[in-house]
Length: 140
Image 1 (cartoon, rainbow, N blue to C red):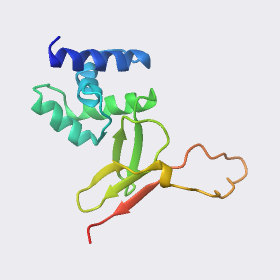
Image 2: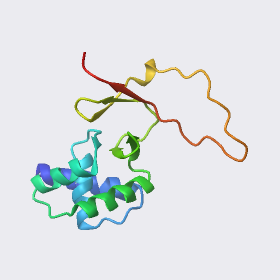
Image 3: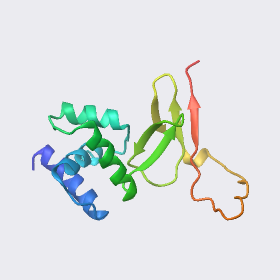
């Protein structure tokens, strides 16, 4: 099987497990995200650039919409940095992140080293749905 076929198959299988309709563009973007079997952190812009490099004619708006659909389906988790920049992580279990300020890059941080002793109580009528931990780094 050709490597690109393997990537497409992984992408298609990934969409199928979440019940996401496998349009040509979704399969192409899924293949870029999970085709090699590695987890990654992407922005809509970086995924759009990768799709252009791969020869896929996918608009930036389509990439945004597709990442939103993947997020809604639980295939990726969205991590917001600086209140405006969103990264999408193909690893969906709870884990902390390092944000490299100098490079505007997100990487996984070692979860086994993170210890949260206590969270504040949620206000009346609310419940905590998730805790995102982003540790900001800069070079010395």
